[in-house]
Amino acid sequence: MIGTIAAKRKSGTFSRTNIRNNWDLSALSASSVVQALQNIYGINPKRLTAAGRGEFNPVAGNDTAEGKARNRRNEIIITPKLDQFMDLIDQAPGSSSSDTIANKDVKE
Image 1: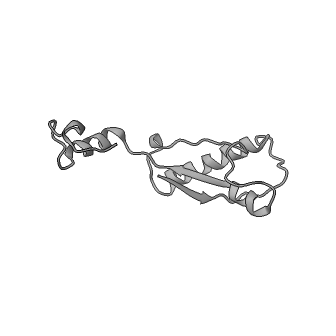
Image 2: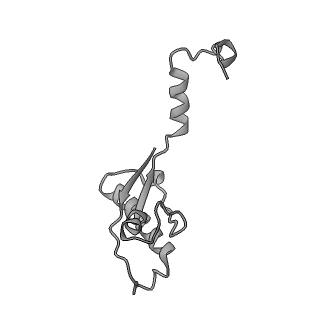
Image 3: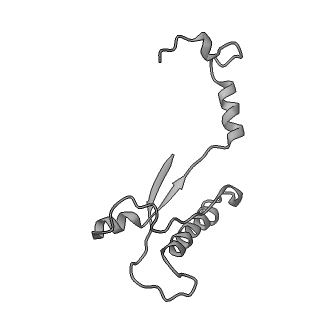
Protein backbone atom coordinates (compact mmCIF):
# COMPACT_ATOMS: atom_id res chain seq x y z
CA MET A 1 0.00 0.00 0.00
CA ILE A 2 1.36 3.40 -0.88
CA GLY A 3 0.00 6.57 0.63
CA THR A 4 1.06 10.05 -0.34
CA ILE A 5 1.24 12.98 2.02
CA ALA A 6 2.06 16.55 1.17
CA ALA A 7 5.44 17.89 2.16
CA LYS A 8 5.52 21.55 3.12
CA ARG A 9 8.67 22.76 1.42
CA LYS A 10 9.53 26.12 0.04
CA SER A 11 11.07 26.39 -3.38
CA GLY A 12 14.14 28.46 -4.00
CA THR A 13 17.70 28.46 -2.78
CA PHE A 14 18.85 27.01 0.51
CA SER A 15 21.39 28.64 2.79
CA ARG A 16 21.89 25.68 5.14
CA THR A 17 25.21 23.99 4.49
CA ASN A 18 23.79 20.49 5.00
CA ILE A 19 21.39 20.96 2.04
CA ARG A 20 23.57 20.85 -1.05
CA ASN A 21 20.92 19.84 -3.58
CA ASN A 22 17.38 18.56 -4.07
CA TRP A 23 18.38 15.02 -3.12
CA ASP A 24 19.61 16.21 0.28
CA LEU A 25 16.36 18.12 0.78
CA SER A 26 14.34 15.02 -0.14
CA ALA A 27 16.27 12.84 2.32
CA LEU A 28 15.87 15.40 5.13
CA SER A 29 12.14 15.64 4.44
CA ALA A 30 11.77 11.84 4.59
CA SER A 31 13.77 11.76 7.82
CA SER A 32 11.44 14.35 9.35
CA VAL A 33 8.39 12.23 8.51
CA VAL A 34 10.02 9.12 10.00
CA GLN A 35 10.87 11.01 13.19
CA ALA A 36 7.29 12.27 13.46
CA LEU A 37 5.94 8.74 13.07
CA GLN A 38 8.27 7.63 15.86
CA ASN A 39 7.87 10.57 18.24
CA ILE A 40 4.21 11.47 17.77
CA TYR A 41 2.65 8.11 16.91
CA GLY A 42 4.99 5.78 18.80
CA ILE A 43 5.97 3.59 15.86
CA ASN A 44 9.02 1.48 16.62
CA PRO A 45 11.99 3.10 14.85
CA LYS A 46 13.31 -0.35 13.93
CA ARG A 47 10.36 -0.59 11.54
CA LEU A 48 11.01 2.75 9.83
CA THR A 49 13.30 3.66 6.95
CA ALA A 50 13.75 7.06 5.36
CA ALA A 51 14.92 7.50 1.78
CA GLY A 52 15.12 10.47 -0.53
CA ARG A 53 14.84 10.41 -4.31
CA GLY A 54 15.33 14.06 -5.11
CA GLU A 55 14.19 14.97 -8.60
CA PHE A 56 14.68 11.43 -9.89
CA ASN A 57 11.13 10.07 -9.40
CA PRO A 58 8.67 12.80 -10.42
CA VAL A 59 4.93 12.16 -10.62
CA ALA A 60 4.31 15.31 -12.67
CA GLY A 61 6.21 17.71 -14.87
CA ASN A 62 8.07 20.58 -13.26
CA ASP A 63 7.00 23.08 -15.92
CA THR A 64 4.01 24.32 -13.88
CA ALA A 65 3.52 25.35 -10.25
CA GLU A 66 0.95 22.56 -9.85
CA GLY A 67 3.39 19.95 -11.17
CA LYS A 68 6.15 21.18 -8.87
CA ALA A 69 3.76 21.05 -5.90
CA ARG A 70 2.80 17.45 -6.75
CA ASN A 71 6.47 16.48 -6.87
CA ARG A 72 7.06 17.90 -3.37
CA ARG A 73 5.71 14.87 -1.56
CA ASN A 74 6.58 12.07 0.77
CA GLU A 75 5.40 8.57 -0.03
CA ILE A 76 4.83 6.14 2.80
CA ILE A 77 5.11 2.49 1.85
CA ILE A 78 3.51 0.12 4.33
CA THR A 79 4.80 -3.43 4.19
CA PRO A 80 3.63 -6.35 6.30
CA LYS A 81 5.85 -8.26 8.67
CA LEU A 82 6.49 -11.22 6.43
CA ASP A 83 6.47 -13.81 9.24
CA GLN A 84 3.05 -12.62 10.42
CA PHE A 85 1.81 -12.49 6.84
CA MET A 86 2.82 -16.11 6.24
CA ASP A 87 1.11 -17.14 9.49
CA LEU A 88 -2.11 -15.51 8.24
CA ILE A 89 -1.87 -17.39 4.96
CA ASP A 90 -1.49 -20.68 6.86
CA GLN A 91 -4.65 -19.86 8.85
CA ALA A 92 -6.74 -19.01 5.78
CA PRO A 93 -9.77 -21.24 5.09
CA GLY A 94 -8.91 -24.06 2.71
CA SER A 95 -5.18 -23.71 3.20
CA SER A 96 -4.46 -27.34 4.04
CA SER A 97 -1.41 -28.95 2.50
CA SER A 98 -3.59 -31.00 0.12
CA ASP A 99 -5.26 -27.84 -1.20
CA THR A 100 -2.79 -26.92 -3.91
CA ILE A 101 -3.21 -25.04 -7.13
CA ALA A 102 -3.02 -28.37 -9.00
CA ASN A 103 -6.28 -29.46 -7.32
CA LYS A 104 -8.18 -26.35 -8.38
CA ASP A 105 -9.94 -25.61 -11.63
CA VAL A 106 -7.69 -22.83 -12.89
CA LYS A 107 -8.02 -21.35 -16.36
CA GLU A 108 -5.08 -19.53 -17.84
